Image (tube, rainbow, N blue to C red; front, side, top):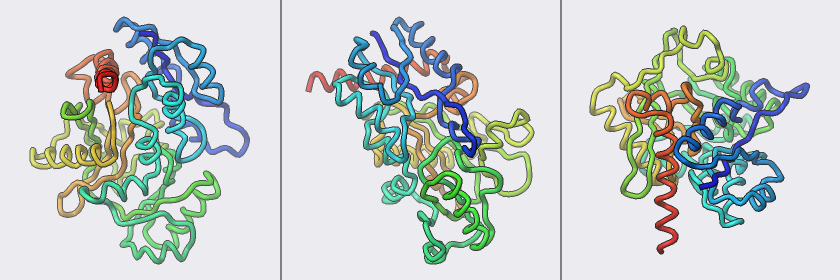
Amino acid sequence: MKLAVLYSPPGALLPGDPIDKYAEHDGDETIQGVCGALERLGHVAVPVIADRRLPWRLDEGGFDAAFNIAEGEGRRCREAVPAAVCELLGLPYTHSDPLTLAVCLDKDVARRLVASEVLVARGGVVRSRDQLAALGLVYPVIVKPNDEGSSKGIRGTPVAMDEGSAWEKVCWLIETYGCPVLVEEMIPGVEVTVGLRGNGDAVELLGMAEMVPLQPGPFVYTHELKTDPNFGEYLQIRTPPKLPLAQLQAFEAAARAAWRLLGCRDVARFDLRLNAEGLPVFMECNPIPGIKPGWSDLVLMTRDRMTYDELVGGVLAAAQGRWEISKSS
């Protein structure tokens, strides 16, 4: 097949831009990795930037399908736009549909949908001091952008020990990123990320990764930590997790429930934490999880069981199965 690999490259920072403005965008290493894997699997892979010219690029490119890892442009619906363009043109594409992509990027909407079957932290979107007080949260809390990923906006010390400190962080995020702000009670237990791949009754567990902090104090996976060259001094990513079987099964069950409730397809990653009672709490879902060779969570959690090409090829195969079912129905 001739595949368009949809992506959003990082741009140049302008004066006044936050340092993590393009934290979610994929660099050359990721695009070359994905294209290389698809080429080795026998396809023709063409990198296609998902900007305002995307409809014309796809319409004129003679593509059979798209491998979609694009972030898009805009706010909470930006990840939905490239997928919606594919639907407009009748072009099959990988990963979730526009509705799921938009819902998952809005963390508060996602948590409200998941809450019918999976535990979520107490909290909500805050736009005023009165709203923050009305939530009646038990401190400490974590303060983060409501519609960003890749730890964008989670910088410095995002944990607040009291209402005054929380409000200061809310104001800073609104001023710096111009975004809605989510404030949630801090979940104290171990953090685990779960990868799932497939569709229908054939959704498989790709693996799990346990975040093991090496420094004292509340652990938060901040932007600074992710980009620190001395990353290994502060955090160990343990794959597989060294946790009791019952806890691992609970994490998987929670991720599978969230997958179903959010309408995920092909592949997704779920971040969860154990609460004080030892039960998994949903934090967020990434339906376009990072796939940077040798780095991203999905790559790390599967490296002992499959090659990078098999990881990428499995996502495409899951999507192809969907496309065939759609054609025959």
